[in-house]
Image (cartoon, rainbow, N blue to C red):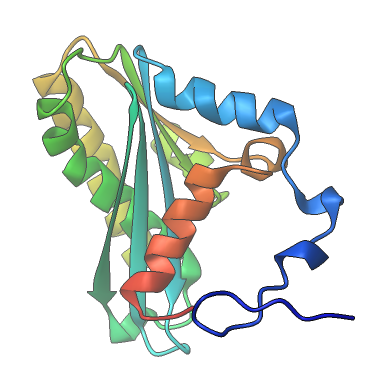
Amino acid sequence: MKVLKDSKGFNNKQYLISDILKPPLSAKARAKEMVEDEEVLKVFVDASELDFQGIFGLGVCFVGQGSVKVISKKHYNQMMKTHNVYAELKSISFAIEELDKIIANTLITPSSVKIFSDCVIVDKLRDNRKLTRNSSFNEIGNKIVALCRIFEGKYETIDINLITMNSDIKRYNPFYKAAHNAARKALNKN
C-alpha cells in the first residue's frame, strides 16, 4: 500500500475514510438551507472540560442569513469540575449574551432564534421549574430564563426557543461540530 504525503510531509489518509462516514446529499442540503434561512437564526452550543479541572471551553455557532459565525471562550469554575451540565448551561447563557451583537449586525431581523443544545436539562428551562438539587445549576438556569426575557423585551418581534438536539439534528451537522470544535479549541484540545 502506498502512503500519500501532502506538501508538509504528513501522511494523508483521507482516501481511507469510508463512504459511510461521508454526509449524504440530504444533510448537505439541510446545512445549505440553514445558512440561507433569513427567517430563523439557528444557534448551536457545546461545552468541553479540560481534564476534569473545572476549566471549561464554551463554543457557539450562529447560522443564518447567508453567514456562519463561530465564537468561543474559556470559563473557570473549580467548584463545578466534572459537571458537564453546568458547562452546557453556561454555553447557552454565553450564546444569549452574544445574540445582541449578532442581531445588530444582520440586515434582516429574524422572526425567531432557535438555540440547540445536546443537554437534556434544557427542556426543564422552558417549564420554568427547578432544574436539579444543585443550586449552581438552578442559578444558571434562572439566569438563562432572565436573559431570554430581557432579549424578548428588547426585540419584541423575535421569539427565542431553547431546543434539545435529538440524534437527527446532531447527525452530519457541521454547525454543531463547529461549536464542539470551538469549545475544544478554547482549551487547546484537539
